Amino acid sequence: QVQLVESGGGLVEAGGSLRLSCAGSGSAFGRYFMAWFRQAPGKEREFVAGVSWKGDNAYYADAVRGRFTISKDNANNMGYLQMNSLKTDDTAVYFCASAPTLSTMKSGYWGQGTQVTVSS
Image (cartoon, rainbow, N blue to C red):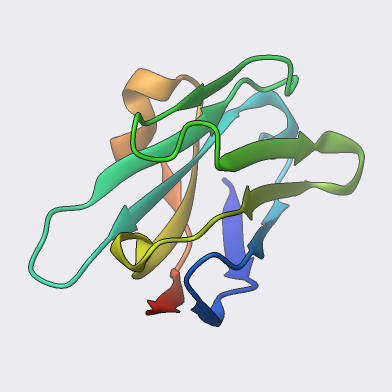
């Protein structure tokens, strides 16, 4: 079992930055991939970024590559998403997820989400 709790969302102006945190618990967190997804109003949930269980390989959606950075701190059971150069299109509820592989993420463990709002 893995439990995930996101934090760090909020309201920011376009061009600004936010760092989201994902606190994990459960023995498997350190051995699982971690990913961030987001869901904007009226849209389907979409993949944002993923990181391997060791934190040494990262994967990004085209829309965020070069602006967002995902990281994982297994020693402290934490995951992060550093978001820079935010755009209004980044407004969404952001979810942290954890699973044995990236391809099984949608059926893995999920947090409750944190709201990110980017104003123009």
